[in-house]
Length: 245
Image 1 (spheres, one colour):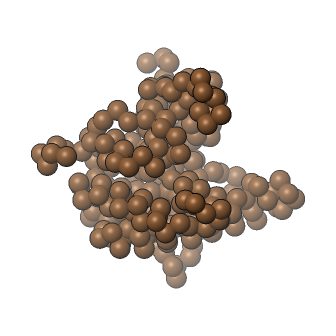
Image 2: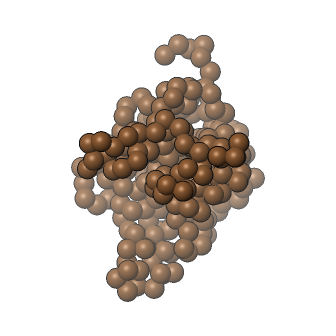
């Protein structure tokens, strides 16, 4: 890649699912996947992009799943938040081994292992070139990590939110099971909401739409795609604007 090219985005928020860290395992964190994700994120930081990350906890624990089995939903969600802290600490360690400074900021107080989330401090970390991993969701039950990612992206004035998944964009059907599934290059928020395409949950999409924050949905496992996207190439599916624009 030519050295004179500049990134298309100054500040991004990367949303990773906990399942993305599973790799070939059925539970926990695959060190190889962790190292690869950290390496790609560190490279973005070296390019001068300010990177915030929200990571889920589904590889360790899903609060909603246990709630269906009879557990109190608030208790389950709090356990899920703690799972995201575990993933965030693992990612912090991997990013620092990849040569970049990283801070974990938690929406619930857990001072002995990471910082409390304070918006102005988070922005200052980003301005100083540190990668910031936002843990524990929003700090409140009943909100998904998708909603937490939208909230943090808007709070830090990100130029773009990247939803990293296992597929290379948004389809009109499940591409894993339907050979005729068609990928969208671009969607409006209203189209994604009306067609229930599963880009993100409704709360997250509405927040992004109402605050003018575009989303790119991409395959985190396609090597190099994250950097190409940040350099302005049309990777994955872009969700932006509304049908009234």
